[in-house]
Image (cartoon, rainbow, N blue to C red; front, top):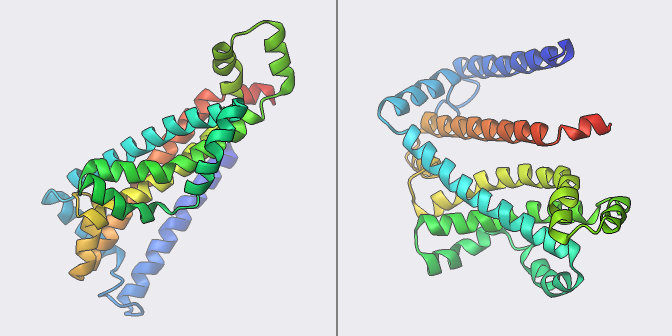
Length: 255
């Protein structure tokens, strides 16, 4: 870690602390409504109360698991479909019209039919999350597999490399940067949809807790839930970044 990176991280921490301090000063001076915009002190106090009575870890785990299952399913299907469409003309001709029809549909629009067919279940939530999180991975995979260096393809053909070996050893490593870009966007969408489905279907999770806090005007608990969501998103995104750095170490040497 360089001095520059340490300085940037320290600056980010100082800026966040300054925002919280300004927020607290505005709340103490009654410049903002304590009913609708509680101070950081009240928000973190509510967070502690939620942890004591057991309203924090179980809902967070439920939300994280729905997000994780939907995101993993979307990532696997997106990579497979992206590779198939990019590498096969007939498959692209058959699937592209239907995918272009489904892609513009907002994921929230399929919640009612999903509830109709699957009920108010975790399966419904995972299905909706997977549908919404699929497209960034699919588009990233398609672009990545389509942009494989032609010289690598010619070399693989000269070596009489089989299609599966070419996909695994040549095309996939070349497409990974685009795939990871789609995966990171997909992860954020999965978290958003996990919250939306919990609010719509009244399932245990952070989304349902935030909705109940809003309806009963418990604004400190509402903001505490939002903070937990931010922390969950931050840690999952950092995990993806670490995995990307480890799997794409070859890019450093290539540069």
